[in-house]
Amino acid sequence: MKSIFFIIVLVSTLISMAIAIPGTATFYQQYTPSACYGSTPEGVMIAAASDPLWDGGAICGKMFTVKCTGATNAVPHPCYDGKTVTVKVVDHCPGCGGTLDLSKEAFESIANPVAGVIKIEYW
Image (cartoon, rainbow, N blue to C red; front, top):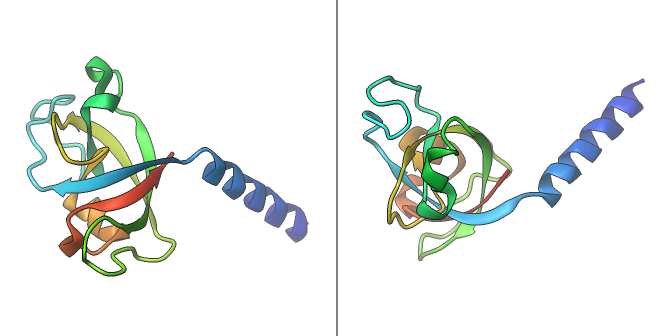
């Protein structure tokens, strides 16, 4: 029974990794008002979507799992190995420098915030 559970977990992980989308992430610290929910707080594990993801707000409420995959600048080894975070899209980040603009709390759960910008995979 334990081996079947292990196989299911392994296959699920491999499928998730196979459909991961590469991108970059930045972070922000003022969470309300947001483009999706106005002044209603949505917690701190949240993100703002870049212009290519925004789609007129259709992405509001979508959940993504995000993993740091590497540095984009001189900060060595910004990623916390193997860590992922699940975030809810609550805002639009027009012209921001990343694919996803994570809350500071979400960013610092997967990477050193001193990096400012990181490479990510999200699914």
